[in-house]
Amino acid sequence: MSFVSYFPGRGTVRETAYLEGEAKGEAKGRAEGEAKGILLVLEVRGIPVPADVRERVTTCTDLDRMDAWLERSRTVERAEDLFAENPEVPGTTPEQA
Image (tube, rainbow, N blue to C red; front, side, top):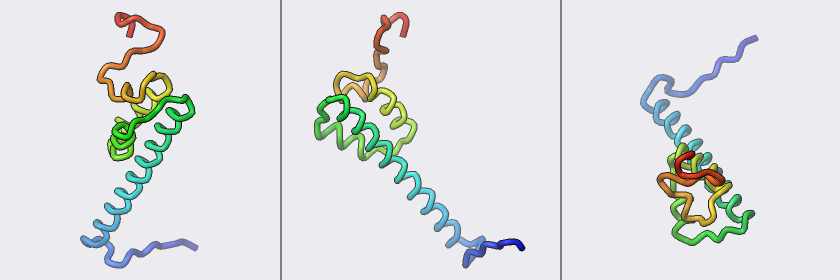
């Protein structure tokens, strides 16, 4: 027995729009989760998060950038340091980083 899925209007602009909307919703949900993770790591580490940093993190939709911020959130000393272009790697000199 096989299962055949049927989407009304298969192959039409409606189906395409539906699938695009679904993908955007999934990406938005993932970005929201990443933002919560970044802010949680900073909170657990006892690092204060100013309103402007919180807004920048929660409104970002670039998942690659957010992945980098999440990684940085483990080692930054200030929330603003998440956004540094060339963050310093703790325990190394600038020549080694």
